[in-house]
Image 1: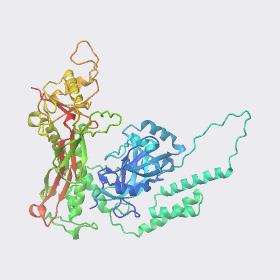
Image 2: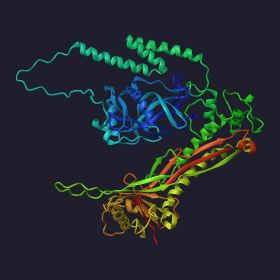
Image 3: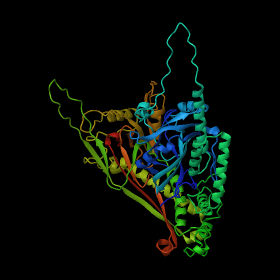
Image 4: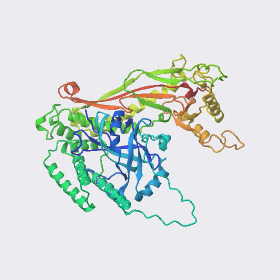
Length: 632
């Protein structure tokens, strides 16, 4: 089933497949020349498989790079201007090492300001690249990238997951270049000569060739950014290659091609999403319902305003008498079925739910490791064992095998969910305010449910946590050496630092040398924790010693904790994975709508049911990354 992508999607053009969608995806940016364009994984709620990216790598090659995205009009993005043209992508190819498509950005001479800006702002999260591309998908899995419009330098790239590029991929040696790339020889200073040599004369033919190459490149970019369908643009490119022309004549060819396409479009019946950019009536009703329930739509969009939920129900079902039946003879929209209203309602409410879920205070984000899984099988969190110091091998002696091992913790998926009903009576009363609140409340409830499960890892079983694979609770004094009973003070925080630093590797007596990065407290201890980590002087002393722990660690206040004196510490998940979350069906809850007039709740109860489902698993990766103080 093909659904509309939640954000940054416009309607497709005729040359694209019927189910193609246009997306803008945030990508990583490393330096003014090297970039990881897209990586295997998830972005904007979509899953990009490896085989899809491998096949799409050539589509990124030679694509233009613009400064900022095109302005968004109601009928799609506005045409691009050559004034915004900054460069192009070259050497785009699949990188097995990066597990993604990598490429180089070649900035033009007119965009040196943007290249310099990139060099300075590349490490800031608000600066990056955004790919404007077309794709087809089956539910949330991308099946094919059909074409790439451009890769643009933007502020605040589209959200959904940023693909971080490792530092080593910015080095040319690790860039998966072809075996024999064309190298430009470095300029060398001429050898000293007592007799000045005459300056070499540049061949006129060489200059002419460079000018011809530049003209060809600009002509191809002009065709590509003309807004013509892909098949027409390909034909124009072939015509230009066979018969080059002046820029003025090229503009005439493009204008003629647009006139032909416009005439062809007038003869094509409008059938709905995925075929032309112009919105049909059903598309506008979809956007109007989103606007009704509180979803932000494009500014200045020509979207009708619905008077209420009752008008929407009547338009989509023809059931003016509120009998709970579908009357196709009264519906004025083409291709409307009993599932159309379900799809529109579910799409809009999912957007509201996702926004409410993400706006909830997610205190646990900095301390957890999140992963997606293809099945609901039991999750195994693996901890590899350490290896002690290497043995000394004397001359002529044999090497001996070194012992090592691993340990695993397991977690089971849980399925959380409920449903809420919208009755025909509520529709007849036009209770828009109540219906607007349904997805918001469900999103907040889902966020609170997951947060409570994570908080319980620290507070459950009288503050000792769950039972681990070794038969010992998460927090223990002897076995795990991560449990104390001291109140929160600067000195006791130092004791936690030392205790975590002294933790040893699994199957090895070697110290891990990790440190706590986050101090987790209830609201009652928030002020004390902030004093420890923000005071310029050592807290609790009178000799004004410098506070060496100032701003070294962060404070996380846990709303679910009710014990006013207990506190905990957690290492960064980048150093050691402590709390782990596994997701099935995405990292946010989903909404489903059931409203068939022949079966189910609409038939038996005159009720459209809205179901929310959230499937996840919460567990412990390694107890050494966590520490607890149960104050007595």
